[in-house]
Image 1 (cartoon, one colour):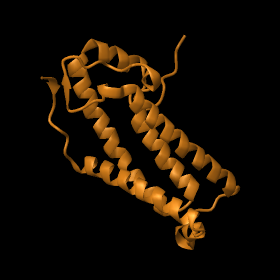
Image 2: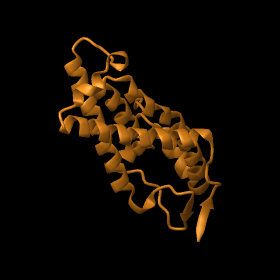
Image 3: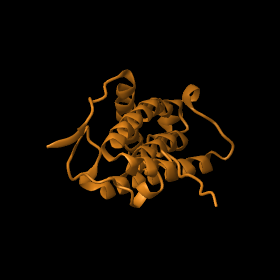
Length: 174
């Protein structure tokens, strides 16, 4: 039996989130395939290529962000377990505030954002920017999820919001 429900969100922003995420995975697969078969230089097509001093360091930072984002995403999914936010929650649903949720309220989305930015820096190609269209959609989704969680958990969730940032940890004021 569902305890709290809201209407499943439907909007252009949600479609952008889904489309941007799909593009990210397609581009990641493409990058891996091109690298595997020795055609990674195809990514360096002149008008689409971004240039920075110390490009190789930028590539390494991009790879580190992508890998970090992936592990943050996986960590959040493992910790969340059966308590993922669905558009309906059972009577015994618990608010997850441990693991990465101790630091931010939406670590899986932060993981996506890190992967999206990491891909841009790893590729240094304008095509890699396209998945960033997903970010506004995820921001909207988090707002709707927080509405659901506030209705379900009330003051417990409000206290959690006050001490934990949405995507970035809050600074502790002493």
